[in-house]
Length: 472
Image 1: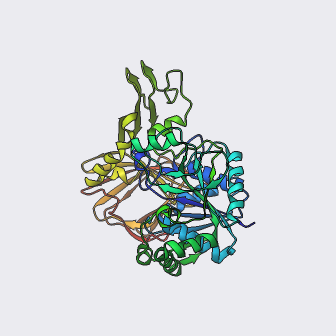
Image 2: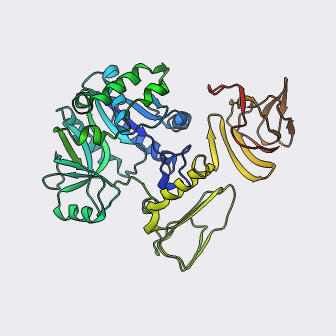
Image 3: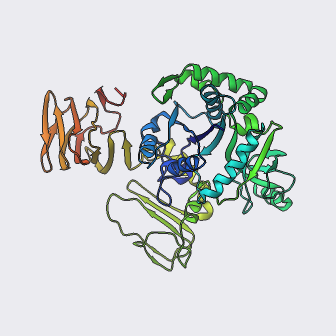
């Protein structure tokens, strides 16, 4: 049996702002040690898959490769890079066509979300193997979750009766309101839709041809427009954007007659909100989930998460059932009962053009990272790290000059046509409109403090002349 693990790594995770941002979404959050993406990849490996196929945004390639490269046994991986998100329908259509062309019609695809938490990997593998057997018999398989309450955040699967055995799905139901969800649970005939699937490449392509021929044709066109470089497929943005923005549930699963559910015999969370994150941590005797250095007085059921550039004291007094998330550039205080409304905060910030919805406080780049430490009118202070052997682009700025001080490692600083070896404690000045480049020529991480001075300090004031990562 040819088995391919397909990981869908998209979405912005707006309900987990301010940690999850568009440039650093939920799959890259660490929960229980590894990132959620790493956990998803490891689950696929545990199933004995022959290949990993990742569908993700083109801007997240270097982040995803970073996760895979640090695995003890990195899987053989192919990437399909989306110029823009087009929902799960086009993503799965592209994946099915890719597997059909590359591995053949009987390739079993285990489709996983990159942002789920499943602590019991052996139990998941057992369910995946059960699903694979059904897939080889021509079934479109969905993993169903036993509901723990009338949740309005999930779609539902209606069956004859909820059991621990696989069975046909009678119908898919979209996210209901609370009274409807309560009525569903009272019948004992509904699972939650986990958004994880299993089928052969041919079965899915046939289903798309029958139920969503337009989506299949658009995916074929997008795949034809793609260019393969090594293990990375990139698409023409215009042709890719002609695909419909539709979920695989709407496109296929709600219409197909050959759909089966495999009940999950493992713990599962889509970690879709801050209360869900808190539930993934071990609570103290007062129901609180936070680090030991948080000072709490008369506090109950509260989650505190601090992601600061340096040590910071956080204290809570006389509060109950709150979520408090502190990052260097944003602070969230919300009642757990209102956690679903955090998306409205993100929408309001986007309307204002606020950077905190796009970029995290510590921004990851192919060469390393940067974090803004201080910004006021006329100046900005950054901490920049560069990995060994990596370089920033050769660039210049129209509206700012820069001052660099190396504090760790050995850098090669190009200013104009001069290249200057720069060690800890040494300083370099980058005049306005002068071309410059920073490279790490040492064996350890290069760290420097940058002070920008000018009338405009936005990230878009960069003119790249040459770049190792194809951004010039």
